[in-house]
Amino acid sequence: MKGYVARKGDRWYAVIYEGLDPVTGKERRRWHPAGTSREDAERLAASLAAELNGRDDGGRSLTFGVYLTARWLPGKKLELAQSTWDGYRRKIDLHVLPSLGSIPIRRLRPHHLERLYDEKLHPVNGKRPLAPKTVLEIHLIIRGALNDAVRRGIVTRNVALVAHAPKVRSIPKVEPQAWTAEEVRAFLREAAGHRLFAALWLLANTGLRRSELLGLQWDDVDLDAATISVNRGLVSIGYELHESRGKTTNSRRAIDLDPTTVGILGAWERWQSSERGAVGIEPTSWVFADVEGNPIHPHSISQTFERIVARAGVPKVRLHDVRHTHGTLLIKAGVPVKVVSERLGHGNPAFTIDTYQHVLPGMQAEAARTFEKLIAASR
Image (cartoon, rainbow, N blue to C red):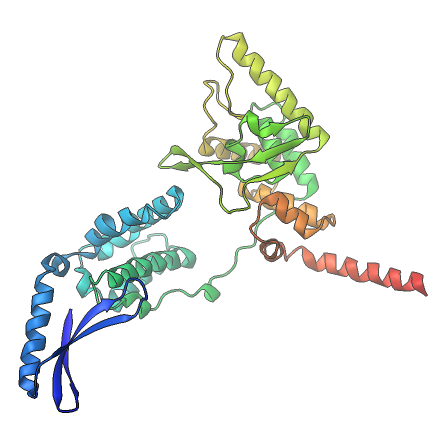
């Protein structure tokens, strides 16, 4: 804590800065009367500051690395999704600790952070540079951790607020890739006969996220009503499977199925039941499971997808781009954006519009021609 002196009228005071109020976020300063002598006030301020700082010897010697890993990260586990928390942990372990971990947190300066960001964007010795978006994410983690340190009174200011970092507007937006309808058909033809064909077909025909696809259980499937209910997701954290409740509040939703997809899922259910019954194994609750009844690992289906794409001779895309393909083809076909948004489980139709704005210009031209026809008919 820092101390200084201030005068009001003919009286002097020792003023002690005690950090930010954890509730209001406002600075806290305590005024101590010291009489009419400036020298007495200065001695009192120094004494009080030394006393307060002496109570926190651990804070004075606390390194940024120990603060992050032993104090800040454990607390964040209470408020973050497991996958998000693990992403924080990996970025801190890989990128922050090697450069900043040994610096006492109270000696951390803006130039330390700027040097780290520059090293990640422009590495030497042939190392691969990080994307500006990743460096920005590292900066936001550091900024959030130091904000918490200020609230706790460990440091008096957040140096990350001063340090220069990549700006959101300077990061080029990566447009999602999408197949044409013909390329989707070519991929599915190549996938036919594979044990996970039903999973890949469902992915292409519903726009499910990978985690949502693998989190499906048979109780979520109603073949009579031709719907599936998305109630959970399966994500890989450190290669271990963890159940998540969805990426957004709209992730839990019902999706209508077409008759062909209903038929494929029904055939898969019968085949799965026969396979397990033939060897005397209890039925599994997972729609897509391995031979032991365990859910398919996300890495496994991604690797299967990549091998089939290579054989199919279609443009190389990510597994997640099949979801973008589903949305793109629906919007191009004139399906209302609100319907596509609900089908994909987006939190807001505005996000759907922003994501698929590369498709919308053609639709606007079609809308103009439609309106022209309406006016011509009325004449």
